[in-house]
Image 1 (cartoon, rainbow, N blue to C red):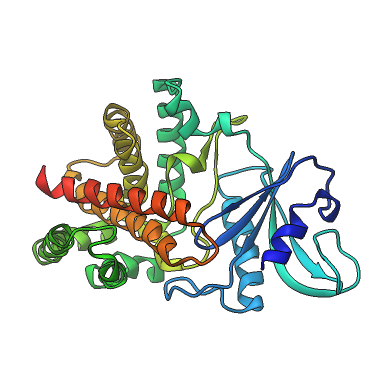
Image 2: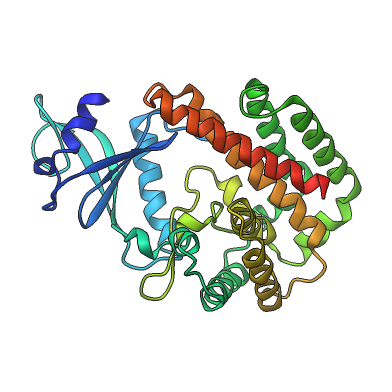
Length: 333
């Protein structure tokens, strides 16, 4: 994989003219950032909830990524390109050779247009928040709903996600999460399921279980012309098929993680007015905890990633610990 990374950082091997090409690694992707475009290659990993272990699966999920993300963005997700090895080098320009990977080609979004950048510079306004609330409320009210999707709103169905989280995070106790936090969050989650069966059922009958985005946080919201929301979950339907409150809870939690509690409150008030949500605060807390725990888990995974250096791993540990602390703070409130 290191040879492919080196070759695709050479702009001569890309389909579009570029100067310097940088690479960003996540636990599941290699992202090659050029001047005007971004090329995202999925890593051959299998975390159980995500399986990119074969080339065929990686190709399939590349196409899913393009298809699903076009729901909330226009002109950003362009195509799926084969990564070809001709015996000497890896290229995205086509030509003879063996197809060894696939890459999603995206239009590059200027960092300054991201919600996270506007927030960090103190330039995020109430008008920005209103626009996000409007887009998300309309998306959630009109997103696909089927009897199959409804089943993912049942507590025993969603419990698959939370059980999996606790199982996968347990190995990181003492590294990214303290045992006291882990045990308290698991007890609280179990108790919530036991006490709120009727609420989960009401959400289903009320049509609130939809094919959502699944990964709503500030780095995925772009104030380009109009508003674009990118990088939805393509690799596992059960992470998108969810309560609409679970979807927006991610963004609200992300704002609070970064110290934007007032923005979070304003967004929630605008959204619930537009989406017709009332008295869902306890459910919102449940899903905020879930979202913070997931982010802690994802950052914890980087501890075991052989492609990431020690300094990056240390930063991932700190991020994970912070997310777990945020999750814990919701049950202390």
